[in-house]
Length: 88
Image 1 (tube, rainbow, N blue to C red):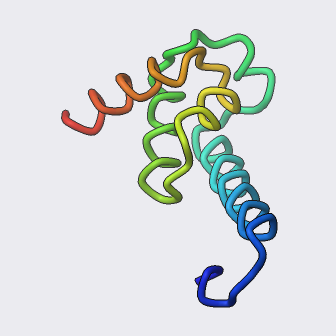
Image 2 (tube, rainbow, N blue to C red; image 1 turned 90 degrees about the vertical axis):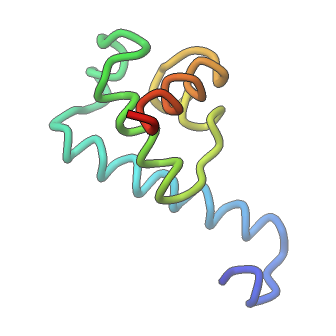
C-alpha cells in the first residue's frame, strides 16, 4: 500500500511505527491495561504475550519493537513466548 504510493523509505517507516502504536494502544485498552501495568507486570505476563502475538499477526511488528514497548526484555524471549502461544 505505502510502497505502491512510491513514498520515501522514512515515510514508510513512520507509517509502520504509527500503525504498530495504534494497534498497541488498542490492545492495551482491550486488556484493561495502561503504562503503569507495563512496568509493574512480569516480563512474560500472559496478557503481554497476547498483545505481542496480536501485534505480530496484525501488523508484522518486529519482536524488538514489541519487547521494548511491552517491557518484555529480550526480543528473542518475546519470539519464543509468542511462538508458544501461537502453537497452542
